[in-house]
Length: 425
Ligand code: IMP
Image (tube, rainbow, N blue to C red; front, side, top):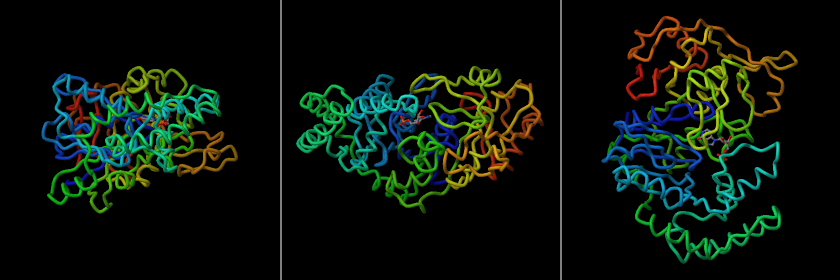
């Protein structure tokens, strides 16, 4: 397939890295279109572990063009550390390009992320405190600093002085915080711009040309559908569009370029940060899933909240993204848990049943998950490499998931290694 999108179908951390890595090995171009270093995935290649945040996973393949589109926000300090980590492991970054339109995460964004979370108190969002929301705020406020500005010292200086003065006013007068020394910030970030200048190129043009030349392109999603600023659990969401439509706006290409859209989900559900989670398990089974599945954040190390597979949210993802197939990861984690439950709807306190994920959180107040119970399994499935090799109970689980979400399961993850994947047509 020439152009594929891989998207998270739950609240993130679905194991997109593994699916992306499999597809990246077949791609000639890998594009990232939104988010920033709030994302994180671990890729293990030839026994070496790489923790990637913004750099597309194609970087591990020496001939793959890796593109960072206009919809991404980049913290240059952190990004340069990521590049250094790769260079230290002998990974070349010569095929990496950053769109000049990407917005720069400035130190005041990081500070303001923390200050506004603190101000919200118990109503905080639980952000990664990487400055992502404040950077997107400036983008839409039209006072942001873009990569183009960062690599042009005179333009950068002028913009940093004007937006920096405003940010200092907000930091000191609204939050009672300490102002930034703007000259020191300008000196530090001008140096980052100097180091990044050679990477800047028009990603919209590069992607368009690659597609015209018939190259295989992988658009790798970060975060996930239920964290989308519009179609997620607002306000407990990130500030970008981690849905398939966001790939087009975040890269600068038209939807007709896309041939295939794959969603990724776990065979259960997790989320980090605050916000609703109807099928959450605050019990022994939830703990077991967390421990067996290693459910601790790559970026923040936070323990993830865990729960049963929620077909309502994945069906929502199938619709919002137009999924052609779902990669269902970590089926092996469900081994030995006893009967398996799947949430098929939500029941409101007044007895009404919600089959579609609602637009507003208030609609979820007091809902009870409606579960279907399916037989569990105790067999070790980590060595299975075809659907037929799976125990009947696993096959039945997957077939029922497919019916409920109205989308075929095209890949099944049975272990952390890349080879521990069952591919289905
Ligand atoms: P922010 O993106 O740092 O503003 O955080 C907003 C919400 O999105 C928080 O609940 C985060 O935990 C969540 N979030 C952001 N990035 C990721 C991710 O890559 N995986 C899972 N959750 C994420």
